[in-house]
Length: 326
Image (tube, rainbow, N blue to C red):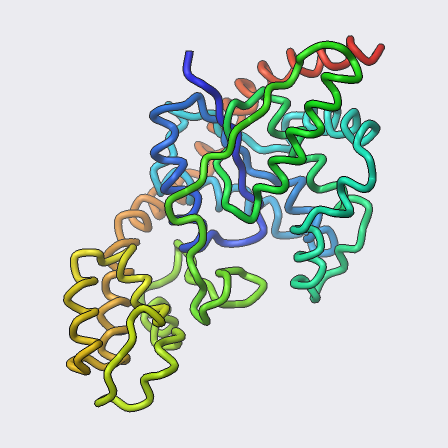
């Protein structure tokens, strides 16, 4: 039997290039090697979007379409919506009871999010317990591995700690310890050089129109030491050059040499990159447009995923409840 993976993404808006390169490209490879459970993490989305949840249902379908268009296959993977499998909250409640408060308060990503997200009130009981729900997501399916970025490693370690605590308290090894699978490109910088995030308004969406891609690329952060067109460039310090390595690798070396010798200017470099991005996204967007014509098919696919996910989840929660006397 193949080892199992659990992973998910929050449907907080259109997916962007960071999601595509940092998550979906990795998922696409892993689904050939593992028994993959991929969830649309709508409960997690509500942790920060609870004040304005109107777009949530539309985002769930839209994100699922992006997954399929990017190569995630319901034949190879179980694709479902987190809130459709009620056992997530059952296990979350059990873990909430046994998780010491100090474990959550020391979580570095919690403190980071409090600093970064200033336009929404996330000083809530639910947001503090975000990692406990993540632990429930992972352990509900007894995942052997979880694909994560380096910033999520503390959350995965906390999930392991919670699983160990449950096993120790109730005298049975119910939950395995999932290992981390780090993506090759786990973080793509945004247009301004910071982390790509909708909160920073520095993203390019997977569904972005070609004309908007061209406009956004022209605004990208470049080599700060290159002031004049005749100045020699330093591509190692240029955000645009890093994009070439991912989206136009065959041109990277040539563009790098031209930049160092001032044979190409930043505007020209960005213009070429924009066309590379348009071409890279073209087949994904074509598939995406096909899927948009039949949203009923997407809903049916998610329901089939729910049935498969719940079959596994119900066995785990029954085992856990029996041990705690429920």
